[in-house]
Length: 259
Image (cartoon, rainbow, N blue to C red; front, side, top):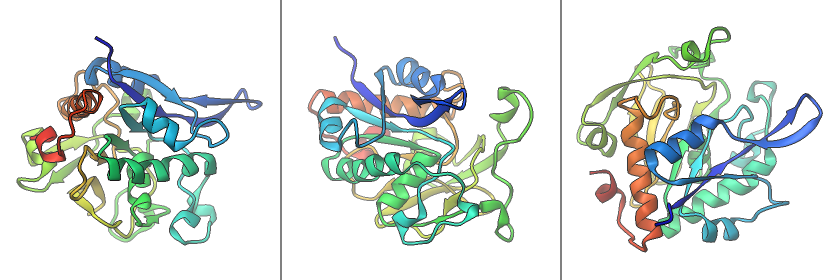
């Protein structure tokens, strides 16, 4: 039996500073294939090559990955500054309408880091350009030095809403996560529910209220060691179940998929 197809949103990079590529971290494919049990398919997130309507027909679910470029602040009505960093307008042009279409259709997606931020912006929310510059906030950025194991190490607690979707999925109201992001939610998008936060108040886990499908998104990187990590694994397993439901024509809701 064919596995459900999960479209993994790719990022634009220059290989060797001159060769344009669309790339995706192998840890994303590993999590989708070996934890979600789905077929990973890298998407060149650029409207010159793909359109949202095609993607909705080809894929059973979408992994909105992390990436160095940020959502352009014009997408939420603010001017760009140096603090906003680099951008990928082509990815913005695909992912933001894709999120809105998936919410309406009930087609599953799982947002990670930049993907988490895309979901908030797609639903009308805004972002802070640099969390660590805010009073009382910790530095959520990736450590500049060290091995991958050290950069993706668990660094802070996320407190989940008691009895909420993430709490029920994890079986715990407090989990440990890594943290590798500079930006974060400023104003919450329409129907976005903050279901978990870091100790400094930074939103870390969200979903779209009353959406007919799987819309869980996290600010950390659960794709790292997803096979073994007790926080990451249930997220990717639930996402895989949602993609299988979609592939089979079952249109079950968020609570059923994550109960």
